[in-house]
Figure (cartoon, rainbow, N blue to C red):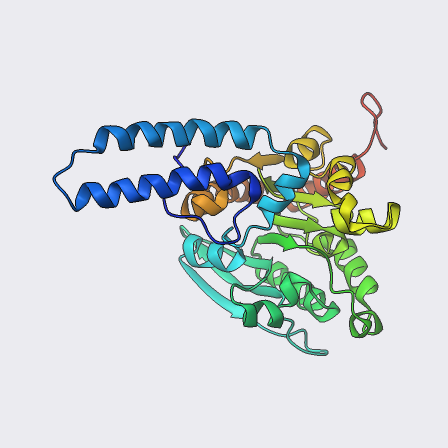
Length: 330
């Protein structure tokens, strides 16, 4: 397991990380002092780094569901754009849905990774305030889902597998999106992804909220990062409906069973990809590398299957979700 970064934390750090951030700051100060003077502080630095590793492991082992939701939303957590930059050898973006426009909240394109070609589809949140506004913070319009399906059909025609990165609090809830058929676009994607005749791998890298996630979330393998979440609704949305108060979001997060541990136990995801110590935001490159290895493993496994068997397994996978133990479906 890699050690947490000793760089100072971002200003929007999480409350439970404050003791860790204080240790990181102290280590950084000692390193600077050690390199700029004749003092020998290496021993003390090593002791503090060991203490930081142990304390980080203890803190992250005891996170509540609501705290993991906040980790999934961390400003420095790697986004789809980071995976494109750090994971791929080549990427050619494809634009537009040929009906209305090009939704920036969904990115699609041909990708190459270690000689393996595929279509990448993912939610795009943006990093700067300007980009986030342009991408609606990763909340896609119906034209985004139509774009995704159009490119998936192109990948099917070319015999290319599909990799989907899920990271959205939900589909865009505006009036314009509803007028242009938001619900129908998502439903059509869910239905059509069952019939796409190439392997599909889905990975939840941050937030996996509601139908906005499911619109590109039907696959032969569905994985998620350790500190991501996947749920029928956001904790805030659930709290607003059940308790009429956003203050109940932590209780909602607990009730929704939205963490990777819960979803793996319930059989809703195939595998949880372990994050670097202290979360993906402390070691983005390490997190990207782990996701890359898992995707390559799944793609090579799925590409060896005959198409009819691939589709049959995909149907059985989702039809079997929620089935009581010992009961089989036809």
